Length: 405
Image: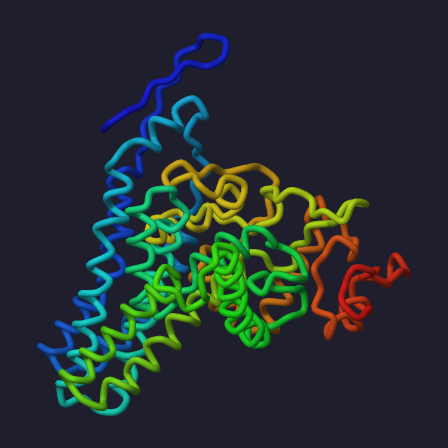
């Protein structure tokens, strides 16, 4: 297996082998799973093959994370540059781009041309949409890179889930305001995922459009200019929809609506769990403190990280946004999720269970130390949260910097 050798500041030799090198191929294979299940369904006609993907993603995957456990292994700082320059890793993120389109086209054709029941149609559309949510993850990895080619690939792959505004809002909006009250993609303590979605989905699009509009206008160009990357990505989405409609007719419309809604929900699920309740403070000068590893919830669970290009090492990602997935590191004493993302999604869909588990973890974090002034709280939930968590100190969170407060 390929190894990397570096030298420490005191002249000591350091050797590192990425033992997950070939396992990263799972991030390429996982998004094409609909092809397998559709084939089995075509052969047998058994609807169970269309239900099984939901069991796999929301039942088996969390179980695998729990059984296999976590990996705290870090690449040494001295070989990070070598690891970053290894073309193998980036090629995996390139290969998966056309495969996302293959999955979409196959699922769309199957749903609209085969004699499926209504329940089968809905299952195919929903599951293929969930997998399309992984295209946003691919776009996330590619869109953070300085390479024009990879930025182009990000715009292309984001056409699959119809989320062409993601890179603009995420890179230039979310990473700037993460873990603040102003960020639409940072969930607040006491805010359910369903309430969060109503704020996050429209807020992210509006934020992305405002950011790109400002950029174009500063260059003397209109918002609807052809160089607008949001329009470029959505143009591919529109072209795909037109081709589908001309090929298979009206049945593609409900398919794409369900597919897109499921893809959006996947991103909403990830955004919800990644920064829940975490807060960055403003200094006396009004400037936000620098984003640190403790401003993101982290997970080292092996299986889900292997199929998500290490997305769950989110703390290091926000600290070093340009760093590629294979180089992301684990830190001690971070906000830590008790399971991988798939398992945490299930908990998030049950707000009472999520609050019971995560509010306790949030308040126990060393930098929070039981102080509500160190938490990003949903104003509507403030009274109940204060009664549960603030009575010991007999002081309410200040909120002096919130609008209208």
